[in-house]
Image (tube, rainbow, N blue to C red; front, side, top):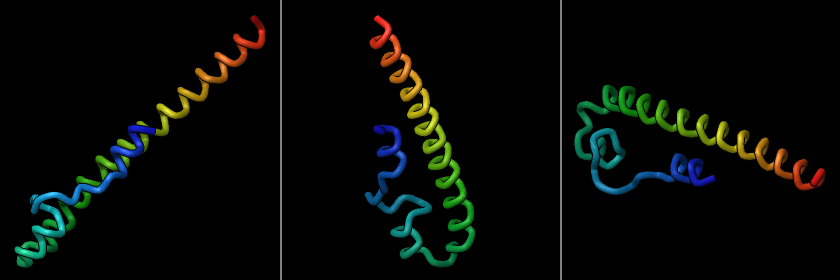
Length: 73
């Protein structure tokens, strides 16, 4: 769950290139920055969400195996 929270947590600090704060100060490059940077952000976010899903699935399998071992023993 920690991975999910890190991935979903918004980054609102500073006026980093590609942020809404940056675009409000520099509208002439808005379309170019919007497409490039939002694509990069989305790729990182989806990779993180995919990793979170894999970790959650593996943890559920391990939890199920531990439950079976506890019931058998």
